[in-house]
Length: 237
Image (tube, rainbow, N blue to C red; front, side):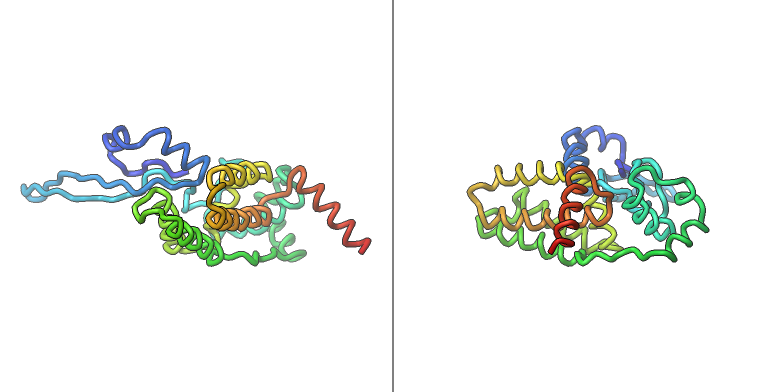
């Protein structure tokens, strides 16, 4: 997680709260950029500069974060696609040679390919815009918290250098298992019970994120049982 890098201490103490931190970590809502003013002096001439920086951000966009939430690799590292593949095979008990030996990684890559997702960042972006459209239809104002949040999601998505990588990372952070998905959907169904079209568009967005998370992370619990039953039924049919 990226936290208040380069921000003035006075700004952090005054404007950033535990609620903002919890919204970022639990609901994947990035805090708005913060602006600070600095007094500088050059050749005995004082002047003021204005800087706007990110404050609290769910992902460290410079590194790939492994499941232990401690180890990180640079984006583009040859081990990343193999690590994803190994998660599906070994779960959290990935052999060290897969993590650290390049030869093993190359051998493993030769023996199988990493499947590409059919869900892209454009699909996620369209779903977010659809939510904004339904929000306006239900009379949310342009400066409302709801509209501003989803506008921020779309803006950030368009600015990412690797948008597909970004949405996959967000998906995994949102839904580590099926329970996390069920809890979030139940919450939205309670909030938007009287706004059926808006609820439908919100459910669609997070269904996309959930399906993406299943493609990247290892299966757990009921997901494994359901996958086994589906495979058996497919053979019977």
